[in-house]
Image (cartoon, rainbow, N blue to C red; front, side, top):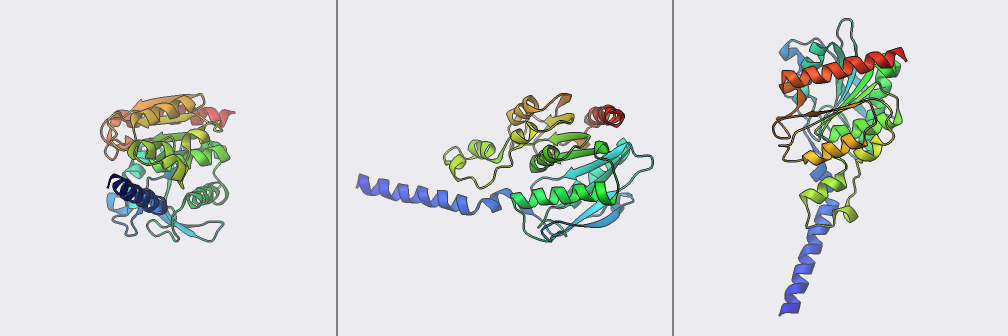
Length: 274
């Protein structure tokens, strides 16, 4: 009877492992297709843009320009929702004096396709080309800003290109690292189909890096932000946020806005002088 019980438990465990293996995309991506609001609703002037990727997808985004801009922010959102849930960032960067491109990955919002890790990297490159080739913005004047999963995508792009600055808010070191914390009873490092290795990307980044994370983050442990800060090159700055993963982001506190703005202003100015 004991042997039979062990066999049943082993089969059940194997079933869970296989379920997680094949269902990983549904554990990583939570896109919403319907836009809940537009920048016009909060009084922002913007342009709706379509960006073509090299593999044939069309990404939807919002371009917001400001007079006498200090630079341009390329914004990478997290794994849930769409750009309509990040409108407050547009207002924040406008107050800081920066143009902003906020876009949806494939499969999110009005963008075509199905999300995947290689796909998000292609999306990042397409957004970069839009700014540098179509808008004619100098790479040294571009800030790559990523929240949560978007931080991993932003760091990957920063390792491929030469932006003026990289900012990461509440970002993990890698998907396997995070999954090992969330699912300690599963062999996640063996079965993970995703990498999103932010720490590895930071080893190839050469621009200034700003990292923000909250000790109260209930989804991505605070130690992930600390480890990313250790891996980042100089000059760099760490900002300790407050609150949980979905309420601790930078746009909610004037002090945080001031810290990020000062770091961006100083380091983009330096990049322009080089």
